[in-house]
Length: 96
Image: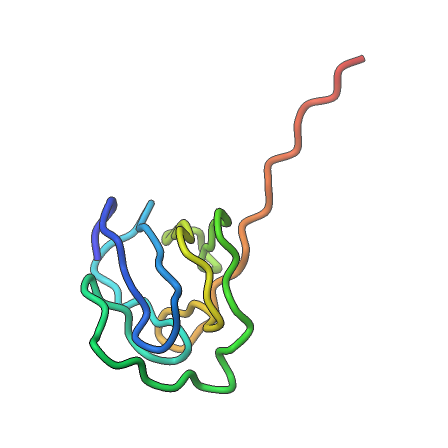
């Protein structure tokens, strides 16, 4: 995993682009993601089946990893078994 690379899920249709972070194994639906999609899809873990949303960014708790979802799916993203969170939009400054 390195910035700019695309990862594909082995259990659903989810595809992400790495924005920030490297050297970690990203999981989707409880299974590791790879740069090449497998011929046959596996089954997603029930613990990681909340789904992903296209165009949304996902980050870890510390903010060291950021992924952009380019194709939605039924599996949810995680690193080392810890679920990634949807990144909140920055609030715009008020114009008085």
